[in-house]
Image: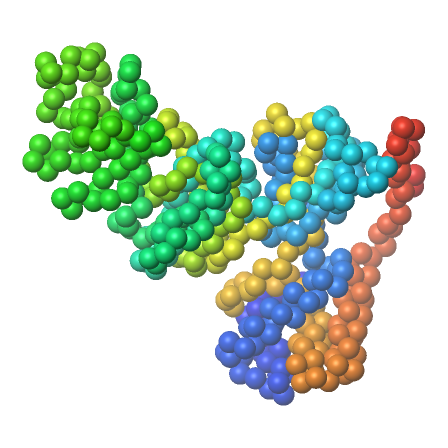
Length: 407
C-alpha cells in the first residue's frame, strides 16, 4: 500500500463518478467519503488497523477519535483477552469482573470524553484560536443529585448548557479566594448569571453572589441571604465588620468560559465547527483546580469515543498499554487529508457501486462492490508478504482455572 491524500486521487475518481464529474464538485468529496466508510466496514485490510500505545485513566482506556475498536491488548509484554459488553452478563458466566484481572479488557461502549468526571465540577473551556460569534459548545448531563441539567436556550428550557466560544462572550467566570473562617463557603468559582449596571454579576455553587460596583470601584460580595453584604473593597477594615480584620486581601481572578451549572456526569457534547482545537476541563467548584477531560478537533462536532475497562487498574493513573486497534472512519474535508483506504481501484469500484445502488440497480451494484473487496484482499496479500499468522486459541474455563494460549 502507498500513502494517498484526497487531492492525489480526486481526478481519477471524478472520471468514473456519474459518468464524469468535475474534480471540484462537492458531491465527489461526499461520494469518496461514503466509499471509504463502506470499505472500512468490509474487514481488516491494509492500512485499516495498527499498533498503538494508549493511556489508562481511572482503570479505563478511551480510544482517540481515529480508532473504532481494540482487536488485541498487551500489557507488560503479556497478551490478554478483549471481551465485548455481553461478557459480564452471560448466563452461567463470570458475572461482574473482579478487581485485579489485568489480563482482561472489557468493552464499555461509547463516551463523549476521554476522562470521566471524578466529582461534581464546573466545565471550563479553552480555545486555541479566537472563534466566531456563531461558535458554541453544548454539554448534556446530570448534577450530583442525578437531575438533568437544563437551561434556557432560544427562549425555552432545553437539555444541557451551551457556552459561546467567541471572545468576549457572556460565558465568563471568576475565582474568588482568600475568605477564611465562617464565610469560607464564599471561596470558589463564580459563574456569570446576569449584569448589573452593564457589569457582569456572578454566583457560586453555595449561593454567594458577587458583582462589580461602579460607584465604589470595587467588587461586592453577598451571602445567600438577600441583601446581606459581606465584604467590598471599601470596607475590608471597616469597624462594622470586625470579623474581616483577620482576612487576607481578597483575590478575584478572571477565568475563561465556564458553565453556570456544576456537572456530575456528561453524556453528550455538541460542538459547532471551529477554527482551532477546543480543550475541555473539569474545574473543582472550590479550588478551581482543573483536569482535562476532552480535546476536540476543529471539525469534531459530535465527539464519541470507544472505552474499555481494565479491572484492577483504578489506581494506575497515566499507565500505558499497547493495543492493536481498528481505525475509525473520519471524513476527509480537504485535498491534504490522508485517506484511510488508499487502494485506488477499490475506491473506484465502490464509488460506481454506490451510484448503481442509488439508481436502484442492485445487481450491478453488488458486482462492483464485490470487485472492490477482491482488490482489497489482493492488496492485503501483497502487504503481508511471507508473514505467517497462526490462529490462537485461548480458553477461560469457569471454576477450572485458565488454559494457556495454544499456537
